[in-house]
Length: 297
Length: 248
Ligand SMILES: Nc1ncnc2c1ncn2[C@@H]1O[C@H](COP(=O)(O)OP(=O)(O)OP(=O)(O)O)[C@@H](O)[C@H]1O
Ligand SMILES: [Mg+2]
Image (tube, rainbow over all chains, first blue to last red; front, side, top):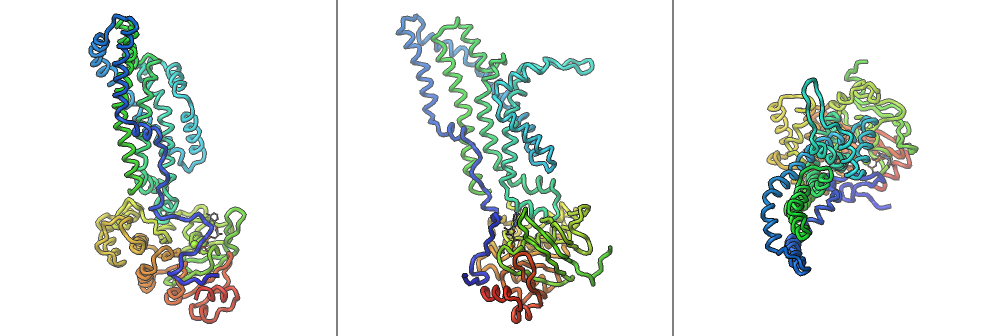
């Protein structure tokens, strides 16, 4: 046996899980796969898309069409303000509202998962798992078809437009993922913090809101932003349900231009590029925040 | 039952504690009088931490009784928060709140738990900072402090609640040899002022100097106990002798 010299040899060892100091509490980053991928894309991406959009009319021309590159550009140019101000702005609005609803519900559900009451915790966990693992489109259809198109409260009739149903439908998977972010972040704080707090006579609620959540708040921001980027990219699926966001309006614009096939690539390429230009900076920022928060508090 | 100062402030009687099928405490009894300093020593895994964590109900027990100021700690109807206001605890890993400064760490519990006046608490916190010799570090975050400094903030944080008993669980075990001393000095001063202290420690010299009574635990039982002089120089049980032989 080694001779133990107090204060010289290292602390006694137990086979207990060691209570690490607060510095060690940062775990592997929560999954930011999408943001990492997007932030890793080169800015050449929109350039390539745009060139394809330009080259397509040439190609079409070579096939004997009388529709020139100038014509197709002219069409895109005419529709662009409409697509941006009506279509894309509405897309962004939907993504904001979905994120807002999803975040509020997700935080509540996440706190529910952490509840000391077994039934509440279990039910919240179940709801989280269901909505996290369901196809988004299926959730959208369920909300679309099961929600009434208007509510009657007393004498007032409150209409529920399609876009509002779309927001509710999309916010369900967002909610479930935010719930997991909250649970994961709270669980990443070492139990020693709970014990230190409890031994100072803080109640469970005070411990959670005063000690634990303020410590992991920053850590929740990058994954939260990651989900915002994913959500934004997913919003076009609401066009299937007739919501007049950018993709839907693009299809309508092409229809208004006599459905010329030469327009397909320029128009949809344009939509792709604006989605990229909007989400790319968000992804870059997310990755930067993640790096910063993982170094120090 | 009302508690008077001639009765033990902490009384542990025949406590049994298991983690699943592993019995960690196998009938431990000890009493601590007000103002007394007791040290618990023993090999790793003998249940020292478990025992003192039972005193402020961080661990539950399966059998036996623990009272603090006459109140049964493991009574299901006990107000745990009231108990913890009376019992301070300092951990091996400091466990300061990393998002708060040293001063805020000390002030938080009195303000939020005891609902004391903030200005009054701050004045007291500054006195405590001075007492643990950390003037000038009031606004430092734990990450900016050395281990020894953090541990002294942790002691001050506990003291700010004006506890009647302080529990120390190997509070110097994670420190550099140079910083061990500053923390031990702080605890010695506290003991000299009459604070009731229950210490788990590997610092034998310190235990000998500061303790009124030493308890030696091995595999979940108290093997031997006595005042430091008798304990260190005249140990009877072969397990104690062996342990002391390794350490001293
Ligand atoms: N939460 C727990 N769950 C399961 N087993 C535990 C738990 N806490 C402690 N133990 C076990 O109880 C035994 C006593 O642990 P304890 O931490 O009380 O020992 P100790 O005397 O403080 O040791 P050390 O000097 O290494 O700190 C060990 O075998 C440990 O593995
Ligand atoms: Mg221990």
